[in-house]
Image (cartoon, rainbow, N blue to C red):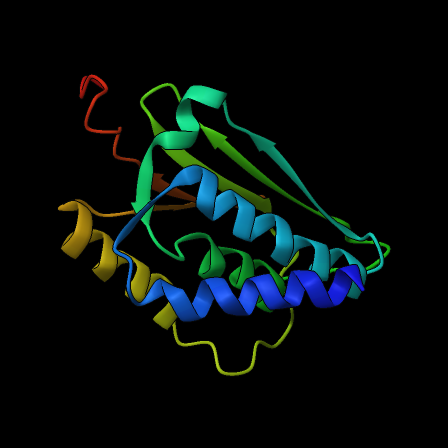
Length: 158
């Protein structure tokens, strides 16, 4: 029953997303928690998430559905099994940006990979935030940095 409830909330969020531009980080994390529940069942506990966000940062904003393509990329591009347990790390950095990082366990062949997810996310950031995302990769980790917009009533110093 919980699986159906989480799946329903995921569909509802995606369907309502076209009416939204920027959303609070808290809303994206609520969506992510429902999505991660499905992934944790699918991968039998071989994928986990470590989320480090302070309560005051939950009101900061980002484009709707920014986290979905990042988590989908983790699953699409990496081996996730007993020998390659995946941990996705989300944290707000000292400068106010959101970092999404995962270890790299590259699949030998990725079908249909054309970089559209990150390109679309970048385009939406430029349109809605006037800035771009940052992609970092080394031999061990893949990281995407998402700028966050502080709520209008908060200081804009970052």
